[in-house]
Length: 124
Image (cartoon, rainbow, N blue to C red; front, side, top):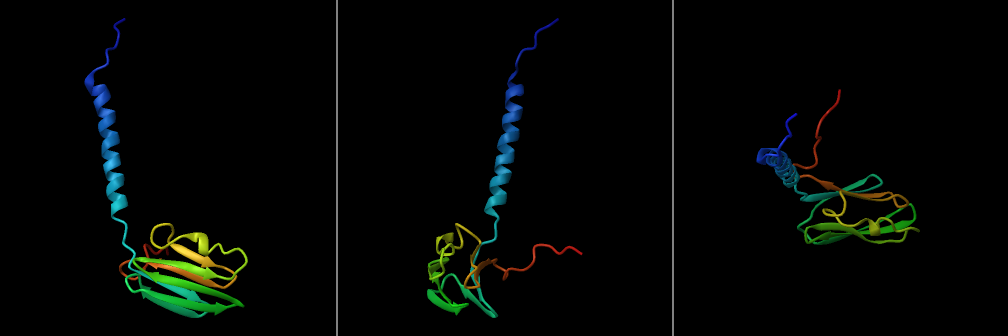
C-alpha cells in the first residue's frame, strides 16, 4: 500500500475557501442599511427625527417621564424615572442596538432605514 503525501493543493484549497467566505461575510456586513432617522413612539404619539439634528424629546406617559436625546448621529434615552431604568442602559442607536423600549412609560425608540423603514419582505 502506498502512503499518501500531503501536497500544497491539499492545504491551499481549504484556506482559499475560508478566505473567500470571509470576504463574502465582510461584504454582506458592510452593505447594512445606514440608520439616518429614528422613530419615537409614546402611546398614540409618533415622532420621526433625523440623527443629524440635535434635540431632546421629553415624554410623560403612564406616570413616568422619559427623555430621549438625539444628535451627533445617535439616539438614546438619557433619563427615565422608571424603577429599573433598563432603557437608559440599553445603549445608543445606531451601534449598540436597533431599538430601545421603556415598558413602564410605554416609550419605544426604533431605528429607521434610509428609505424610511419599509418592509424587508411580505409573507402572504
